[in-house]
Amino acid sequence: MTDDVTRLRPRMMSVAYRMLGSVADAEDAVQDAFLRYQTAGGVSSPEGFLVRTTTRLCIDRLRERRRREYVGPWVPEPVATGGGGSPLAESLSQAFLLLLERLSADERAAFLLRTVFDYEYAEIGEVVGKSEAAVRQLVSRARGRLGLDGDRRFPAAPARAEGLAERFVAACRAGDVKAVEAMLAEDAEVHSDGGGKVSAARVVIRGRNRVARFVTGVFRKRWLQDVHTATVNGEPGLVFRYDDAVVSVLSLRVEGDVRAVYITVNPDKLGRWAAAEVE
Image (cartoon, rainbow, N blue to C red; front, side, top):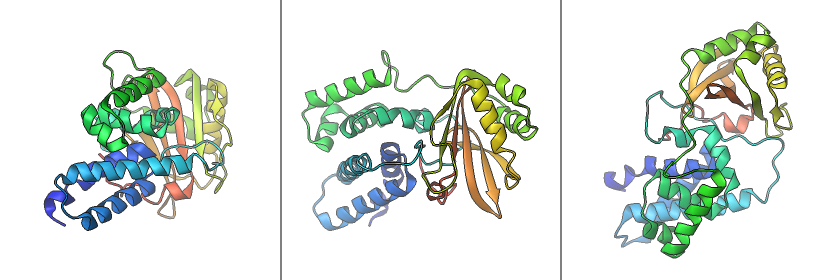
């Protein structure tokens, strides 16, 4: 495979991860797409072939996934990201990826390819097998379901909170429920994803006091001693390790106050932490 084609892999991963919210599934879809490219022969546009094949594979995986039941809240697989201001950073946040769960597979593909990756409507039509007019309707319907007005591409970017993760973990470690509450929005939420593999809340926890009590309770567990701050999907977060293994990743959705806390403890979603290459 030529270098010119290989260089497209990060872009395909970026498409697949946003479609699926799973690094492992995204890697499988991209690998399958490149294998199909190698055996296709006579491909005039490698990028066109790969984005079309990758997206269609992701659509199939989304439809299959939605036929299966998941134990407890589902949280997108966390990825380590830099703190730089990439124009696509907001489309990597776990809050945004969860928002995309409102969309059908075709709506999700059309919306992402148009608003995140700037493909033309006609190009998207070739990917999803629909007319240009139908694609415009898909994108418009998706924007309506996501509550996006005017020309906004993503939900409003959260305010950057210098040192918030450090203050948050300090208050949690101290068991200071009131201090944690002071950092939370009134309608704050906790999404805790154990996937039925390890102990986690089976429902989304809502409300400032309940959230504060839950997260401070998490820090009472003796094995949560090795905690480091990190940038998780472009947002402030924490990584918990035990015997050098990542056992939990937490991220904070900050919109003035902390609006949501996403906790991933499902071991199937932690094996690729800091190793996945997603732009």
